[in-house]
Length: 244
Length: 244
DNA sequence: CTCATGGTTCGGCCGTCGCCGAAGCATTCG
DNA sequence: CGAATGCTTCGGCGACGGCCGAACCATGAG
Image (cartoon, rainbow over the protein chains, first blue to last red):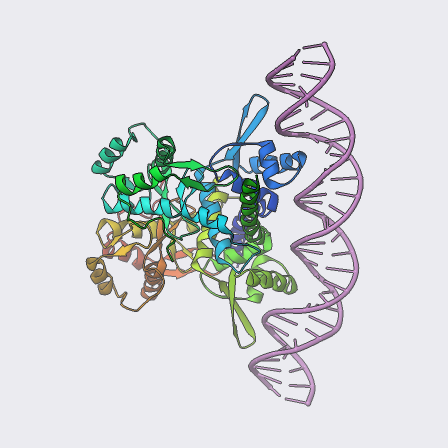
């Protein structure tokens, strides 16, 4: 009896923690801020306020709470305060949440043309998601450049060499897992996250293969980028086409 | 201008959907119900009410909302109504949430001895999680019985034969992915979900290797189970020991 | 048919939380 | 040194939402 009671108590404690986190994400204004931060760039408090459509004071309160719960982190710079997601783990959680939100019954979600852009290619915190992200993960796996075993994932010798050719040096001592997967909300398949994912995005941006778009997480793929990805990474010809 | 405006609008719509789902999980009573359902068994409304520590009427309201959002599903049976999670996707989301909740600053979470039981072995909806779940995934991977490539994952020929020997027939036409991974909140590494994960749990229960515990998602590992897992699946000798 | 049980619906109470106006710090610039 | 900008704190208002008592359906048992 006391046994099951304490077991239930344990459940309650756990559920309490869950509820606290979920409640933070359960407010439209805060959800908007977090969604905006999924772009991967640190944003100033004012920008987040306008993203969320609330006044500066209100936003400040929200940010304080998110900060307190360690869902976001802050960097002061001059008279600005730049906020970013606290960890990739938070970004993963948000993606999982989007996956469920997208799957459920129509929750007042006009699936405009903008959605298609997001499905094609977007930033997911600090790496690429959408069909582009998935195609890259697939191609690298197919060529045995990476092995997505369970857990951290692995970059093979050949993969390391290949990436080095492309201009991505993985030698730097990185504490974070080199190569993780993150479930894609639009395609329901994993794409590459982790250090490698971030490096790939940085590389693509540097080459001018993709460009960030203002006000959205969608990535614009340049013609050079389309050729580059297809040729250099060996993506299938039709990787950009909507899947179903 | 209209461009960035509509982009922001798209973000808002998306954030709205996120917030709706998160808000549902953001209530302690509802979170408790969902946590209880993570055990994988369908529970009656009354049981959920007592799990959540609220009256029947209140619980009914909560269940209606969760049902409406398609986070849970219901099956009537006689004068009982059994509720279960609507999909494994929901279970995955809850695990991700727990991972963040467990990582964050101490949110009123007395980590009692019960926690240790959960970390060792527990049900995660319809499969096994905790160190046991992870050890199984690792062992099967090491022996090349499964390959956890990105996405659905694969069971090899040898794996299929091995599992058949164990008493798990994967021949049945299953529409759900045979073999998926689900991020473990306690160990931060993936364990086996999907059809295979469910089959493994069923098998272990049938063999009497693990037993469900009342009032908790913890799985009790019998002595026979400890031997069986170690010998038949080739887990490392110390798989049951706390990792860090 | 009547009663008991499990569940849902209704109505009203009350707390929490989001919101903004106004005021208060901090930093930078002229 | 002010003045301007970016952000936070404070205080009070208003609403949404969770809670329970009571009454109301539905199913099954005697």
